[in-house]
Amino acid sequence: IKRIGIITSGGDAPGMNAVIRSVTRTAVSEGIEVFAFFRGYAGILDKEYKKFNFSDVGGIMEKGGTILRTARVPEFKLPEIRKKAADNLKELGVEALIVIGGEGSLTGAKLMSEENDIKVIGIPGSIDNDISGTDMCIGVDTCLNTSVDSIQKLKDTASSHERAFIVEVMGRGSGYIALMSALATGAEAAIIPENPVDYKALGERLWEERKRGKINSIVVVAEGAASAYTVARHLENRIGFETRITILGHIQRGGSPSAFDRILASRMGYEAIQALLEGESNVMIALNRSSMERVAIDKVLTEKKDLDLDLIKLTNTLS
Ligand code: ADP
Image 1 (tube, rainbow, N blue to C red):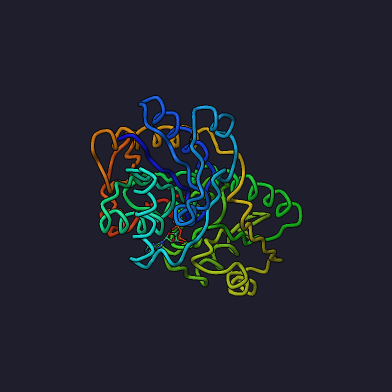
Image 2 (image 1 turned 90 degrees about the vertical axis):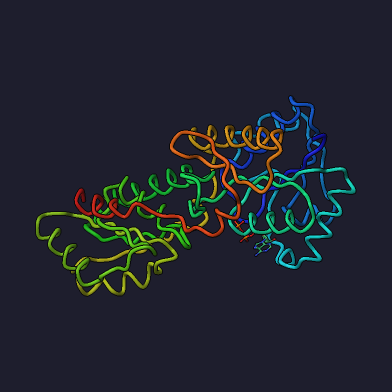
């Protein structure tokens, strides 16, 4: 392989820059040229790219977001548009594409690859941790740390005023961020898409805890399970506590990546190039326990990411 392309696509995640750096430097050190395309699949369709060398990716590891920008390109669902992208890549002599993104981006990559004989390697970037086949996605750890930091601050004021806080965190299809941040902040409960909530039982528990002397209650809710307003409405009359709502929102997407994300990104970027050198295509780089693995993108897209639901019990027991 002489020349590869790289894009970041879909929702951004802290650590994407660390992947770009790792991919570029590993490739260049193997004598492979790197064409970095801007704004995801849009940059390939518009041939908007820059050839990246070792020094082009200096000082970016610690930056949040993605220097390549990202975009949503709905027309990539059409085979003729994917063919145009593949033709552009071929015209530029790009033999393989590295795609950093979520399930949507991986779907596009897989289809373009199968239909047009272009090699692709996926790297899971998603703050939701909703991509199957890998223990962790790029950005999850940083997002979790941001959520924990914010919830901890809310807990201070909740205690002072003896209030209940309903905190809505990211997670459309996955309760990972909600559950783990609840566990890490000693919140009373996490409401997540994977586990139906019994508001009556939750209300009673919060009320019992109050009688026991607890001076705050924190309920973390994943955006995909319910809105914080809905949760507040269900709980308000049951707990006799003044309720406040906070929606953390996009603050969770930003920030300098954590050490964990920088290391994961560096390892995944390196592994993506090794996979290409060994002739692989249509695989996603994954973290399995502590090892780098390659999982067929097909498999990633057909299996559902599971969440350890025992952690709900643990969260409830410890609160
Ligand atoms: P993410 O990659 O974070 O899941 P999206 O779901 O928005 O984000 O997908 C990012 C981009 O990937 C889309 O804008 C589109 O260009 C491409 N994509 C998503 N779904 C598909 C699909 N089913 N077929 C082809 N391309 C897709």
